[in-house]
Amino acid sequence: MSATSMAMKQPATHAAQASAEPLVLPLDAHNQRYLEYVHPARYTNPTPKDRYHLVVIGAGPGGLVAAAAAAGLGAKVALIERHLMGGDCLNVGCVPSKGVIRAARAWHEARHAAREFGGPEAAGTGNFAAAMERMRKLRANLSHVDSVQRYRDLGVDVFIGEGRFADPGTIEVAGARLRFRRAVIAAGARAAIPDVPGLAEAKPYTNETIFWLTELPRRVFVIGGGPIGCELAQSFARFGSKVTLFDRGAHVLPREDMDAARIVQEAMIEDGVELVLGGKLSSVATSAGTKTVRVEREGKIFDFAADEILVAAGRRPNVENLKLEAAGISYTPKGVEVDDRLRTTNKKVYAVGDICSRYQFTHAADFQARIVIGNSLFFGRGRASRLVMPWCTYTSPEIAHVGMYEKDAREAGHEVDTVTVPLEEIDRCVLDGEGEGFLRVHLKKGTDRILGATLVSEHAGDMIGEMAVAITAGVGLGKIGATIHPYPTQGEIFRKAADIWRRGKLTPKVRRILNTFLRIFK
Image (cartoon, rainbow, N blue to C red; front, side, top):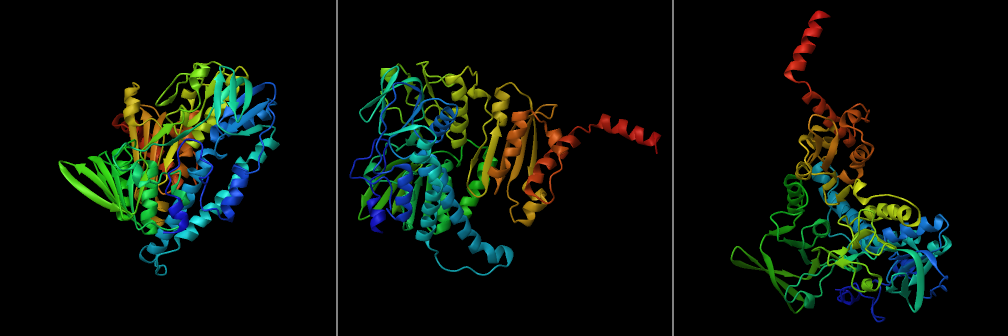
């Protein structure tokens, strides 16, 4: 393993990095350029203004949107970041993971081109270091959007350091005191490490450190069958690692419908991922560079050898170092407590994103921040509960969802009609060799009102927006069916769902009336 990979062995934590620890590895030209944008080494914090309209703790997606929007409206804004501008999304989440996933998909397609499409035979192991360098280069190219300099140019006072409440109206950072009229906590969350004997000593990777790799691990043991675990397990299997994934549940992606999760699960198995489902992690032992993970299941003990362990077992909000008590802000281990307008128990302070929301997505933090700007600085009455929240797991195939699942709808008191369209009934999906999956739409019984939708397909994340728009705008499935979709496209599946719904309205009574009408006018 390379020096870069060996240096990676100290897992990142939520606390400020010690001066001897790097912010990111490897320190190649791409990462040095990236750091100059998101954590410039020679940066000096500004002199605080007498009082700010808004002080934001955390420069992730929610904090950045709040700061930029408030500054754009003429407010005096301070933005505090203890680590890297851009938050999880740019640094350790959306951007690097999707770069890695795309590279893994390309390797998979190359290997299958001959069998599926009569393409050329692909041989060799591929260049993992080049795939990871591509990711680092693209992240550096994108990082200027979240940079310290850009936000300074927008009129925001950017402070690098640990922000803590001193009292209900003041935040301290790097020796400075920032007085505020309103504040937003957008401090995010971090990877949770299960309390398993020997796991911490094995120095596992998390999503916060896995993208530092420059050499492909031969054997990877993944803990957690949620979105992050499944995405990265499948990707590393496609790169060529021997991957084992453990989850306590009966199947991966437990939030999703079982038949949707099963399609992803079978795809992962086909890609070479060994699934260990059920039971519990007993211990981890490390010897001579090999980590042995012990699992107890159905009264039996199973040992799995790995070179590296990736923990993807949930997240914990970063509440510990904010001194929330000093500001009268209530919180629990699940995060900061907020009302539907995203106010904390200190009415001057709001919160957005992973630190307070069950929707731990970049787009959720973005739209929560938009609500907070209106509510905190003006006389807005925006409510988080009114947001229509889509999401996607970027496995292959992807699972995207918006609105209610059938269980949620019934618990909310709705009777439900459900329309399901298999991808194999959509010509473009068949032609693309992507016929495994389906669209499922839940409707309020007897109407075309869309309550929720799930799509399992290679392009589900790009396509689910049509359902999100429909739910947000109150557009029924009938209107979607009256909209012309280009043929042949995979998006035609939404029109197909509308056709099925419309045929369901053709009851025997309606059919008899129509037949009588046609006989009269023949």
